[in-house]
Image 1 (cartoon, rainbow, N blue to C red):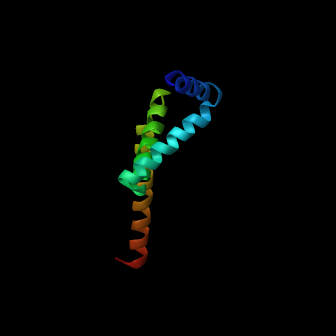
Image 2 (image 1 turned 90 degrees about the horizontal axis):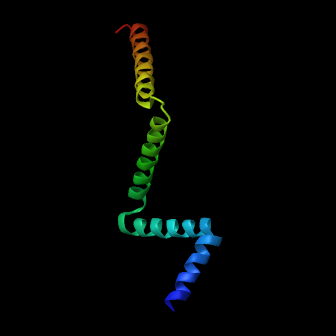
Length: 92
């Protein structure tokens, strides 16, 4: 009995690896949704994805944090210019 189960698992893993991983991921996701709720799990997946993205960029030698800081600085300056022009037009 034990050998048959082990044989089936090896067969599934060797011949249908992607389907097996997909089934395991689906079962894990559904159990997590039942325990914690859909939106909580989506939030965790989103945060994990962002972390993986940043980690991959840092592993490749890219300076993501500096680029992010430059992006924020550029948009903040653009917003300040827009607000100053808006206040000049309104006479405040």
